[in-house]
Amino acid sequence: QVQLVESGGGLVQAGESLRLSCVASGNIHSINDMGWYRHLPGEQRELVAVISSGGSTKYADFVKGRFTISSDNAQNTVYLQMNSLKPEDTAVYYCHADSFGYDYWGLGTLVTVSS
Image (cartoon, rainbow, N blue to C red; front, top):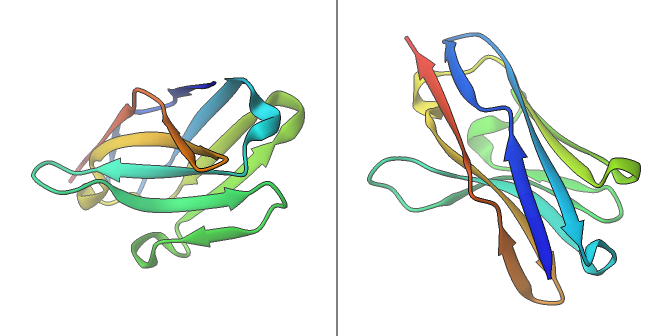
């Protein structure tokens, strides 16, 4: 079992930045990849960024150049640095972990970007 707890969401204006954090606990040594997804109102949950246990990263096209995913293995934490935020980035952001084919999710953190 893996538990994920997100933090760092909030209300910002367009062009500002936020950093999301996700702390993993439990059977963390079984985690392969961790990432961030988001759920916009009326839309399906979509991938934002993912980082592998080896440190390789992948981003959705709509965040390339604006968002950066990173990890601190000593703190069992994955971050999502979000710069140049846009109103269309408003969503609930979820942390995800893949462990031997099982999906684990956090409860989500709300990011609201005002214009």
